[in-house]
Length: 493
Image (cartoon, rainbow, N blue to C red; front, side):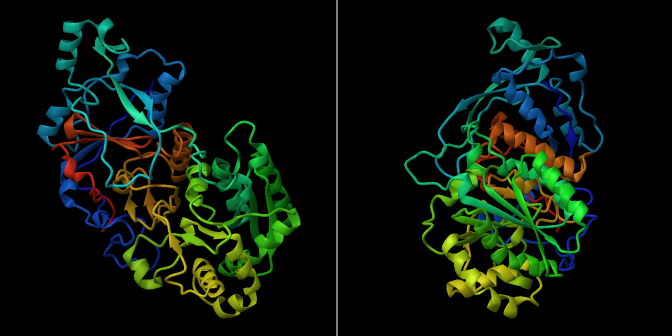
């Protein structure tokens, strides 16, 4: 069991605006949310003023805590794991409150329940009056009164009882057998337009959803095709093949004659179908996504798609969260959130490829080209062709994204977590690089499963908010239950 490292946040985030500005459409006014629920759009400064300290367990710590009851050995707790919180940046009253908590350990005891519906901000949040970490005085008094041996777990750190908390969790492996027909892994194919250099780096993450996680399911892996520029070095392409094979990724590599990246994205409408024919395989779903789209769990993707009749023409995706982006480009499917195309529609898009290319090749973004091509093939408009899913995220969120990730909205995927131009997954206080942050989340979600990631629990009657796999927040003034359908304002602007 690891120590919790305190990540203390002042009342106002510093810097208030991200030092790394988003793309040129950013005008300094920030990006109000546009496609989140209405309650989420009203970002409330009140909560920001009350949030004073986040004990950002590195998500991996929560993994360690949960694994205690999974049969993984737990090291002895040392005296180095206790001590006062640093007072720098904290109000005197808050520091006085926190200084009475010397323990840095707790155990989460999972109790499995059945998953029924996707998470939302409107769902009741598990709520208890028990503090996540007790004050030393009350903890010692309780141990003296009842005896350590009679307290749950019997773990001790520096004379203090380590608290056990039972929490409700979903199965680590999402279940797909409730009578509904779901696509198999082999019914999906992912198409990624990228470069050799990026593919070598990002494919470490692709294993999360392209390599079967269920034992004995090797023949059920999704298809994968990587589209590169014809200008790539052939020797580098051969090296990439070895890298992908070494990671268990059965991805085909193709090169495109189109010089412009965005047109190569559009050309996926033909490349993917041609590749499927080469393989001699039929796919129900063709998934376009950016190389930095991170799907939390292949099984939750398949469950989401289970509601759609694959004999019909479907174009599934999500628009941007940023009002400025929406104002500039209009409502459409944004590529980082993924664009999931059913086979009948993909066939029609293949058939109208020449018209799509001729009409849309000069448009700014590849995702808009694909959206317009889908609209042309379906007889719809750019604004109406997309069937939007709330769990898909372009994640056009500038700066500190902690408030969004702690909000309770559903997450099937993430995007824009590299380069410092958009999302800061752990705010501004982390010492980790962008890539090591997403690697950390990958390891955590592999342990917890997609349904448990970012699931919320409140302790201490509103003083503590635990977001599973991600963070722990201590509030100067306690939350109330009617605040839980609101979102903490942490983003820039």
